[in-house]
Image (cartoon, rainbow, N blue to C red; front, side, top):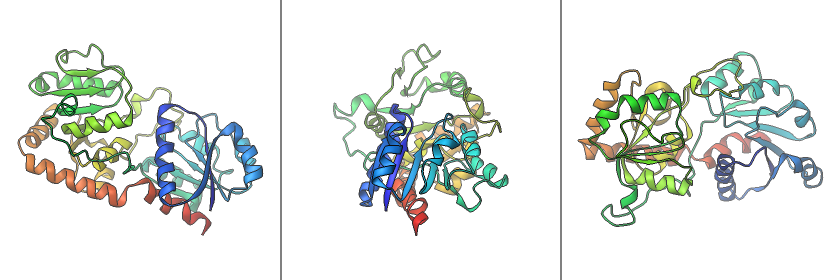
Length: 324
């Protein structure tokens, strides 16, 4: 199968996601090319792909763009449900749609859009990138990455609220927070706050260096620039869930993505109620006091991620069968 992947922007996240998909396609020995949209028409005319994937299209993607491609076409969305309007507006012009959020899937399905051409495809991991690091935590290379609890992700209103509520409780632990927007965060002056973008390789080191990785999901109120006239609350876990799991490290998540988080990972990831500060404190304390349980949870989550939730498995399930 000749596969053309068309991308629409080239920011750090776009490059990262496309690299995961490229690694998976290489493992599958697929014949594929990637190109920006302004070169897609030209490449389509002379290379004649059998399947064209519009990868992470933004809100300015129009039906006119899709009409130029006469072969099988797919929108592979990575921003659901925040840009669901793009999926709705192009339903009559695109062959298939892959969305990583269950609420987006159900909303499109209830409106009769895409019909049997709609596919629920959650985020996944890339085993070549998201991996367990076997290092001695007492050695110098490991020291900067060690923490009791680590969070990697940019600041958003619900996340700031969480950290402010937990500042006193977490003051007794070694905390690492990585992301834009936490500079001057009250109560964390003596903690390890890294106000910067970091590479995924660096993020993986922090995942591996933490006893517990914290995962705080975005709420619909955190995204003020969404192209979402339905005002949907996401129902599926974010990409970080799969990345940390593949690293074989313990994570604790807020419960706003249950029951789908449990459907995907069973009981291998601990959750807490974000509206009850004591819920996090109790769950976190239990994990900190029980190293054996932390290791068991991490081992189970890793096994699930690597066996069921890789980008290679997503491609095999949702792209290859389209031309069968």
